[in-house]
Image 1 (cartoon, rainbow, N blue to C red):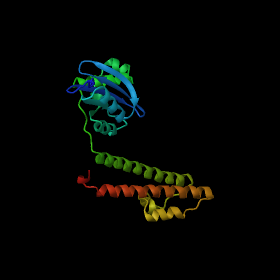
Image 2: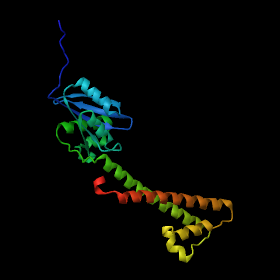
Image 3: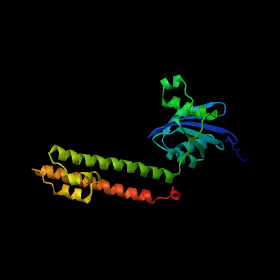
Image 4: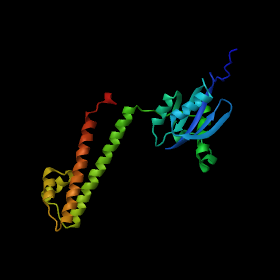
Amino acid sequence: MEAKDTKISFKGQNVYLGIDTHLKSWKVTVLLENSVFKTFSQDSCANVLGKFLRKNFPGATYYSAYEASFCGYSVHRELEKEGIKNIVVNPADIPTTDKDRKQKEDKRDSRKIAKSLRNGDLQGIYIPTITTMEFRTMVRYRKTLVKEVNRNKNRVKSLLYFNGIKVPTELDTMSKYWSARYTKWLKELSFSSKFGNKTLDILIETTTFYRQKLLEVTRMHINISNKDI
C-alpha cells in the first residue's frame, strides 16, 4: 500500500515578510493572510530565508520588504533570486505610531513592516541597475578624490606658511592648480633639516598620487555615454 503524501501545500496563498536588516543578522516577521506565524532572528542570508519558506510554506507566493539602509539593494537582488517578491521602502513611508517611535526595536520594526506590506500600505522605491549603482560609486569616489587633493594642497601651503616660505607672486595663481612650474619650485625648496625636506617630499608625492587617480576617474567619467548606464 502506497503511503500518502501528507505535506501541506500553500499554493494560492500569500506569505508576507517584514525584514529588519543588519550586517550579521536579520529580524524577520512572517505573516499569513489572517494570522501571525512568528518573528525570529537569522543569519543575514537570503538563501537561509528562502529554504525556510520553501520548507514551511511550499507553493505559496512570498512577499517581503525592508527599509533602505546600508546594505543598499544587494539584499533585494538576493531575495529575488530566492523567488521572494521583494520591495525596498523608504523608512519615512512606513506607517509609524508614536509608540513605535519611542520604543524602536528590531522585533517591532520587522512586524511593522510585515503588517504594512500585508495591508498594501507600502510602495517600493526605484531599484537602479547594478551598472548604475557602480557608476554612482565612481562618482562618489571622484568627489572623495577632489577632497583629498584639496586637503593635501592645503597641507603643503600650511607647511610653507608655518616655515615662513612665501610663494613667488608669479606662481601664486599656478599654486591653485599645481602647474608643472609650481611643482618644480616646490621640489627645489630646501628646509633647514632633513625632517622638513622629507615632510614636503611626502606631501608632494601624496598630492601627486591623488591627482593622478582623480585624472583617471575623471577621464573614465567623461568617456562614459548614457547607453553605458
